Image (cartoon, rainbow, N blue to C red):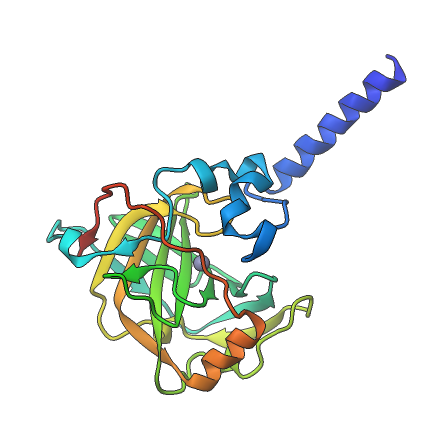
Length: 250
Ligand SMILES: [Zn+2]
């Protein structure tokens, strides 16, 4: 075999291997502003095509007059205090579950909580209204399907459940630190929710993501919100056309 042919083959093998390591990896650098901001995500990599060409993207403006009621589907949280690994990944503060202790049952399917993270301002809107922040709890089932629970955050009392994170938010590049959090304490009192099918709100904007957006917000203090915004002044994606998608309220 000629050396040049061998090198081409070796090169394609390396690409294949690096993809196999993480099929969902989006290696292109992206951000929330300028030339690598949300308006350009679709152009940064072929992997991000859905960001530009997708028909069921997230977030959306959830409008009550559009929601359908009483379709008989349901969900239930099985959360308990657990260890999470906390990092600043340059896009948000993310807490990744150290084990599969936290579960969500949704539409007769069992999901495991993988990680939770934050956006400011909120990504979803309700009747055109945005909240100061939004928490995303990302769950995956055995087949790799995703259900993300969105929890709005308004300014109010200090959130003691999140104090282990917000008392010292990690800087980018800082080593991961273990924190014990009870994710049940991150949920509001009522579980009234708006459900629809959308996408990841970050590259590669993968679709067929089940969204459960809780209507009642939780609270963070002004100082806690300010601490997050000091690191991330704006890490949200604007709402996308809902395209007449079904939104269920339950
Ligand atoms: Zn998110």
